Structures are given as structure tokens and as C-alpha cells.
Image (cartoon, rainbow, N blue to C red; front, side):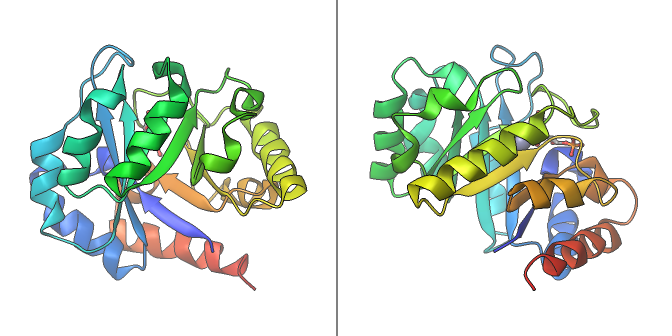
Length: 220
Ligand code: DX5
Ligand code: ZN
């Protein structure tokens, strides 16, 4: 299934509820929430209280992207705030195996994110335990950056690798994705598409609807 995960980092924070309604109405299945700690990435975004408050606005899947150091400190709290998927960066975890186990024990689905320069083979031992791999298509930290072309090859190689192991893995891509460049990403094997500025700059409903239409083409 091809899934649209609008990133609220690109939304108007004064009107979060309306922004969520707009993408919901357009058919987006996930809401992507970017938690930044000012240490793993330079910027600071939002955390537990904001996620908990937004939880009451929607029943869509909350896909929480943890751009924080030692994310294991927050797993239970983020889950309690309503995260359905908790995605941690491999680069931020010394004990990735135990972090994944703890995410699963919390009842959330476990995602592992890789920065553009991190090779996919770091997942070699852990791949069967993971529910989703997030291939960063920009360096994490800010919305509105340009897609890094070489990351497309990582998506393709990961999909081929998962297929060879018989793993029906969700592969998410995040950063610089828009209606103009989403096709090659889908063709490479990504099935969860994060989009921040491409959705929330301008008419969020129209932008999300256009992306959803493109995603549906690949279901046929
Ligand atoms: C960036 C975040 C993204 C960001 C994407 O580090 O992880 O989710 O919001 O924004 P766009 O789609 O504008 O690149
Ligand atoms: Zn993100």
C-alpha cells in the first residue's frame, strides 16, 4: 500500500487542527511528526505535550520521527502520547537491537531511520525485526531542503534486498519530496512518502490530494 505521511513540520503551527483536517480529507493515511532535540540535529521542533494534544484531533496513524540522541529515553512517553510508529535513527542508538525491542514492547511499530550517508548494510542483522526503514533523502533537521539524488539508489537496493529475504518491509522516504519528483521514488520501491513543504505550502488539501492521486496510480 502506498501511504502519504504529511509532515506537520511544514504546517502552520497556529492552525494545526485545520492543517490535519485538510490532509485527512485528502486521504492521507499517516501524520508524520518530527521530534528534534537540538543535539542530534541542530534545530528544536516539538515533543510530547504537542503530540499528546494533537492526538485528540485525529485517528490517523501517528508516525513519529525521533531526531534525538538516545531516543530510548523517550519511547514509553512518546507511545503514551499516542505514537503508532516510533522511528529512531540508527546513528543515535548505541544499542539498536534493544531499542527496537523496547519500541515493540511499548506496543508501537518500530522504524529505523538512516541519514543519507549511512549505508543500508548497517541494518543487516536487524532488518527482520524492523517494521519500517526510513531512508532520509535530505540531511535531517529542517524542512524545505532539496532531495539528494544518490539516496534513490539506497531505496532501490533496500527494496531488492527485502524482496530477496521475503520481507514485505515498509520503506519510507523523507525530505525534498513533491509531486514533481515522487514517481522515481515510488518506482525505486518506497511506499511511505513523507512530504512537508510540498503539502503545507499553499493549499494543503489540494497538494495532498494531488500526491494521493499519484500514489494511487502505483496501486493499480
Ligand atoms: C526533516 C524532517 C522532515 C521534513 C520534511 O529533517 O525529517 O520530515 O519535515 O520536509 P520537506 O518535505 O519540506 O523536505
Ligand atoms: Zn521526518
